[in-house]
Length: 305
Ligand SMILES: N[C@@H](CCC(=O)N[C@@H](CS)C(=O)NCC(=O)O)C(=O)O
View 1 (cartoon, rainbow, N blue to C red):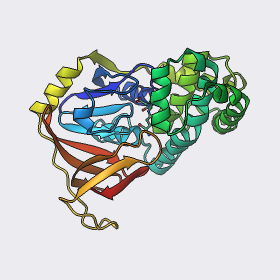
View 2: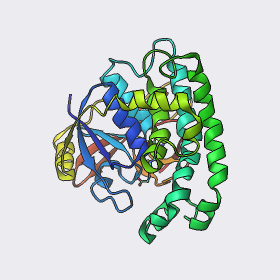
View 3: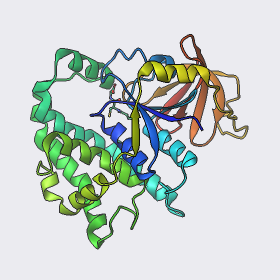
């Protein structure tokens, strides 16, 4: 198998979800540091426009969004499992809860307290990214509300851990633990373990310490140019379009895939792969040659190009 390459930056919480996942798998991986704002000139040849962090590359296959990145890691490195046997759906549903509901208010908790630190370039970038103006005064004023919301959501995890279990679904950490680690890690990283609302969640914070001990696997730093050369030298893995897919989409169609929430930049290509979980587009770029870019189905809008 070609090496796992993660395109990310240190303070990205969604990247941390994958890094801790690589730790659970005790995986060896290569790291390319990307800018935290646009432009991202060494990422665009790979993704064709998708700008979010992180992106995983394996040879000439490019995986967008942690939802799919984690499933692909599970497929390639099945043991130890992210998805406990018989409880795969629960692990994935809890992951959606952490990713989609907790992440926003948790980021709000941090941003409302560090908003003054950001320069105009960051504010402009994040305004474009979110479709909402990065307004320092509004962010600061929202602090009590986002603390309250984050507490309400994290309290569910505190309840789950209340019966003495070590991790969300039992004795071993799973995908949902990696997802929940993301927002808790982000608040802890910026504001410390005694920040509100973490200060009122003792079981969660004991769980957080157990998760932190997992580490990030075996990482080697490489330059972006090396990753682009690896893509150029590789051939994308074969994929197929499910002929029974309810959308009726067929191989060879020109399509655009766009995230439905933030960073809504369409990626255009030729449909080569379709399953219930993923949609895969073939693209060509002068710098990297032929690549296939893979997206999850949930949360991504597909339109004819
Ligand atoms: N649904 C995406 C969310 C990714 C996301 O929002 N990442 C943030 C960083 S944690 C981001 O892309 N921020 C803007 C950027 O890095 O350009 C996933 O699961 O990967």
